[in-house]
Image (cartoon, rainbow over all chains, first blue to last red; front, side):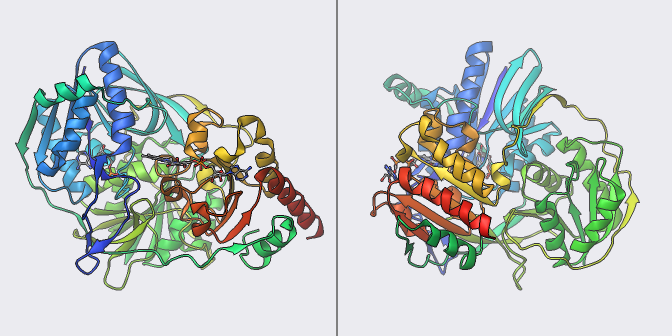
Length: 246
Length: 313
Ligand SMILES: Cc1cc2nc3c(=O)[nH]c(=O)nc-3n(C[C@H](O)[C@H](O)[C@H](O)COP(=O)(O)OP(=O)(O)OC[C@H]3O[C@@H](n4cnc5c(N)ncnc54)[C@H](O)[C@@H]3O)c2cc1C
Ligand SMILES: Nc1ncnc2c1ncn2[C@@H]1O[C@H](COP(=O)(O)O)[C@@H](O)[C@H]1O
């Protein structure tokens, strides 16, 4: 089975968010990048488990610049066989999905795994766009994925519950919690990652359908109102009359 | 301007986030709604109240196979000439809107939190709710998916006309094997009131006081990540950056420290109440109301107070 896992980088989760250039750019000063947690913990690890059970290969793909190579090496250290970087700065979901689709069409994959969303722009867009480009079914927010021959069985989140669905490969899946457990790379993996192939391919530079023009930080919360722990009637009264939420 | 709104009408009752999407569309232009399934004509006509002029219903398929829904909406875009297409950014919207974006080459604004600004840009949450970004669409047509709970639903009109519609949805390649809906629970992403607890509760055997309060309020229950990871509570209750992001009217957090990754999933809540023994807990900085106290005493007391309040109102 040929598996492709889409890997993106994201600012470390405790990053303080600030903007520069008249609030038109994310301030990357001192920001540490990690592999987007959903891509690493769920998509990549499940891909590796399926490979371990059924044989095959796991390739990662990233649309990014050489600045992304460190996060790509981390994915290789966890166990991917090889990596591809499509050489362009990722700025728009349509751009990213189109680049990955062009690459995936050429190579042909049985399974394409993505994270549920990137934790910086939180779009949840790339998976659906990629599936439409490839004219494949897309199972979003899957918490379980098993493959038997050419049949895939998945659990996916639906409003108010979970649905088990079945469909045929090839398939695009976005991965959420439950799919797999985080794997910490060991020393051997880290050493091996240094010599694994990281191929850089030229971008096809499609249109960018959207752009971020400006950013803003939310207004700071006003001071917390402290309530006497003995007097919960007062809290209920405030929630009813002042906050008007009950 | 001609606006097309997709709603999922397969439930027994049309969901609040669908009404929000219709309402939002009305703020932009003349609204046609497209949907599929078995909703009754009269319940669809009711969408007029929220701003729809016309409802197109495709009764040839019931499911929410995203490829089928995408084809149907694309057909409706064609037949109505809509320039703006609206979805709710719910589970269906998240899977269909990106597909449609490629199919009809329309830029997608995912998770809009407000109506378009006068310069045409649209606000979305970025960095897990820690900031806003303003998105410009560079294509002629645009798709907006609206973050649930971002606008107040208003009644603005009368009845909508309802027309049968053939969306050329094609066949589904997905077979549904099983659907599990936990009985009696309020689904977390839709809940208006949420009671949540963290490691401060010490163990799963102590969750009774959390559930009692939730039951009294008619609230859903949630938890911090370590609580779900250690199996004290089911995974779907985990809120935060790597769990579910929620925007209820009221979020009550007991025994949760308020780590930045936790806040990322709940900072869209309208009102936050924090109960913690440690007055230095970071969560108090994000709270509207704070109770410095022991959750084991405060939660039951709060449940009693709610009971009393309900009895006298
Ligand atoms: C990449 C990454 C992603 C993460 N994603 C998430 C996420 O999505 N969601 C999430 O929640 N966390 C997430 N975390 C974990 C997060 O950093 C915190 O570790 C976690 O939120 C802490 O959970 P907690 O508040 O329940 O526990 P603790 O931090 O242990 O806090 C317990 C609190 O309970 C209080 N307390 C103790 N006894 C009582 C009592 N009797 N009554 C009242 N209060 C009491 C304490 O004062 C303390 O403030 C993530 C971490 C990382 C690194
Ligand atoms: N620049 C990128 N390169 C490769 N994959 C990406 C990139 N951006 C996003 N993805 C993948 O698409 C998923 C959803 O991203 P998003 O649509 O941005 O929320 C992520 O979890 C990744 O798996």
